Image (cartoon, rainbow, N blue to C red; front, side):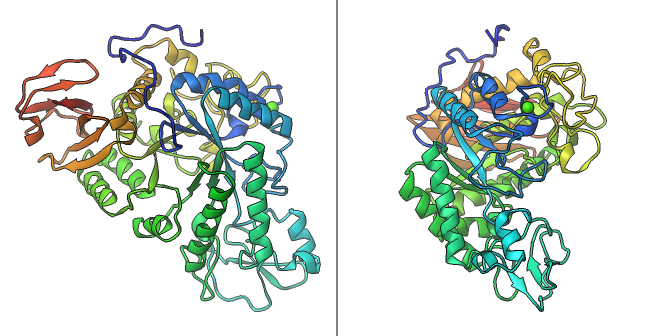
Length: 505
Ligand code: CA
């Protein structure tokens, strides 16, 4: 057995998931950078067969959905500049390998979505090479100008780049990533057909990369334009028509009013809640729940009823939060509280691979450092590869590997596993109605969650000191759902950096 280590006394009594996984917003998702997850052939690079080999691990952890970062051929290590949208990156394997991955995932009750990158292609994509050479067929797939306006790209530099024949082309992210022209109906149809291809292949949906940047306005607005909302509305409807129930989740790395519009105006199924992510991390660092409580209340008030939100503590673009919380030394209690919050808040949790171990960024800084190999075991190769890892994973932190944490019942990994299990046992936590309550204490987030005849009170103390809360909800007797301890009613003491869940009778 993979997980033979003894459960601790605080483990949930019945480990069988009871929340029916009828829709993608139920359960818990997991983001994988394939190049860094598991190598199966010793070349030092993670691959699809490696992911397939580790699917039972994800099932044991309680994961119900996987988001694979780009799997297509690309000249870059990260894959966000695609050269063939219908093929598999040879570093990662073959279409047959991917079919096997999907079959195994589905057999384990795990959905699989893939990164979908319509904003730009690689400058090495045959479309761009033909367009740059002046070929009429693909010229209008991209955006050209002989007299480019002064537009800034996503990183603040010039959004226009010199083409081979003297004129400029648009590339919001870089010259290696020319923006596709989604005002061109042929481009729109290309991406609908690409979506159909993968849905028919068996994927369960898409994470839409750079969703806010899809179509620029004539006056140089590069984010959240009317044309982009219209693009999303049509794409979501297209996916719904081809594969009802498939998930479309947008990289809505923007502010709340714009995110709400993707739901209200465009019918986007799921957004990523970047505002909540900021409030979670800053609240944990400042030891105050005020902004988190306010942001959550705003979210619950203003998002449309059917809007799903992906919630997260990190992803491939962010410094791993275990590093933020570990100065001067690793802060296990705050890492556990972060996980407890993620797995009790309303929304659909997405873990970033290695988060469940408290991995920190690797050496060197930049994006590669956020995407280093998974630490399955201590020692050379990390259980990730029998060869030499494609990038230096760094020395790491003592105790931060799966093998070590499985042996330690008090480890962060076991905490994640118990918290995921708890969420899946209680529909109120998984998808219940939510109300933010004024706890009367700056340090304490108080949240009521209800579903299936059960009402739970979640109390999270973001400070290091113990805080006593007095709430109307605590007038009667309550039961602490992890320990089963009863509380007679009245003031309730929330220990520093802990989250408690009480069942209201
Ligand atoms: Ca490999």
